[in-house]
Amino acid sequence: MTSPASAAPGRKDHRWLGLAIIAIAQLMVVLDATIVNIALPSAQQALGFADEQRQWVITAYALAFGSLLLLGGRLGDLFGRKNTFIIGLVGFALASVLGGFAESFEVLVAARALQGVFGALLAPSALGMLTTTFIDPRERGRAFGIFGSIAGSGAAVGMLLGGLLTEYSSWRWCLFVNVVFAVVGVIGGAVLLRTPPRAQRPRIDVAGVVTITAGLVGIVWGFSAAETDGWDSPLAIGLLVGGALLVVAFVLIERRVAQPLLPLRIVLDRDRGGALLAISMSSIGMFGIFLFLTYYLQGTLGFGALQTGLAFLPMPASIMLSATQIGGRLLPRVGPKLLIGAGGMLGAAGLLLLLRTEADSTYAAVVLPALIVIGLGMGLIFSSAMNTATTGVARQDAGVASATVNTGQQIGGAIGTALLSTIFADALDRGMSDAAGDPSASAEALMTAYHTAFTVSAGAMLLVSVAAIALIRPHRERQARLAAVQPNAPSGSVPTVAH
Image (cartoon, rainbow, N blue to C red; front, side, top):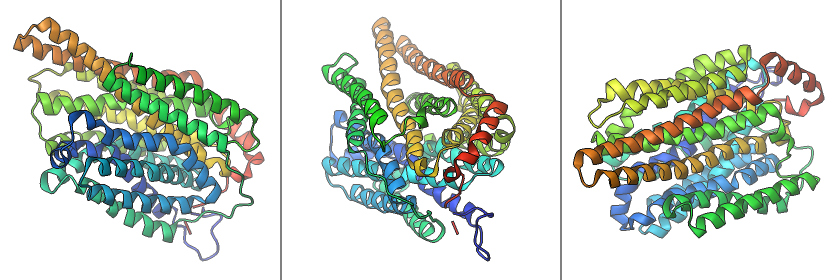
């Protein structure tokens, strides 16, 4: 894409159409993390795999996606983000077809891992092109408002779409549907998206690639193992400790190499670091919503798959409203510190509203208001934090900076799943042991476990506000700093995506 100022004479400005293509690709990647969740029971029945194997359909995607994002981002910087964007779309579609036709558990898991590989190539390219396209603060606020609403609401959309496809067609269409997204993305990308010529092609930091990929695999796998085997299991401890040591080794390597995979200046900037931390913590809180509220709606209130998907719809609607009409418009005026801080408080308030849930609660009176408030908070967080985390980055680093944003989401999500699942299970076990078989006491124990998970999730959302207040600079100071460095970084201020 090119900006109006830099467009050639007679050439139309198609940046906003390019944004639509980027948003479609991002939606495919985000919703695929949840759309398969709804289809899992049907897939398990069709392929005949055991309950303890079921987690690998989710974990295989998260492992590949989360661990390869930094490499995917750097490949976009090296070989052109349009190229990696289209390759990622095609590969994701082919992996989805493989999974849709799977006749065994092993093939399904392999297909999910391949989806993660190509998603790690696609997601940083999408955000990287957006980052280098919209430079004007007002336009950038609107663009990131739209993109942030997709990132924040895609999981809920995935649950709705998964429910529709599973109930009225087949679980296999939860994978086949990605082909539709990919075809639109490839055609639109080929026509609308452009990347500028590269002055030089830096060498790939092989040592950095190996250590960070293995380290992130260890961390994501470790949290998954902790969820199923317990936090004291040798496998979980070994993976988490080994993963952490490899990440430390990665940092030491990046400080010394001439062309690092992840220039440390990207994450050490106060504003960017605060935004990345906010994204990670909000991802932890989000899992308290999707995971345990789904259990509550289906297990306690008796909702079906489609009904559960429909029940979540108010949240993406309020996310879109908040991200585009509030966050997108106010960010250039008040800055991210205030908006992310307010978003974290709203998200926490919405999660605390879920403490009103009981075994006989009604959706309209209890769940609906909480979802609306949570959505308003998440819209402010995602639109502002993603914008802030990619502002001021040089063009050649836009891909890896975008990959860092996605990595924060994935690692936060993995931590949230394992941590909250363990806390929920511990609370439920204590309650059930005290209930001693009494049905009413058992029902109360289940609600207590839900409330414990919602409370911890609310705490994670409050930490989003703490990160914003403690780390992100006040708006005027931040604007003055950006204005001071802008003349020295022309490569980071030239838009690059549709003609």
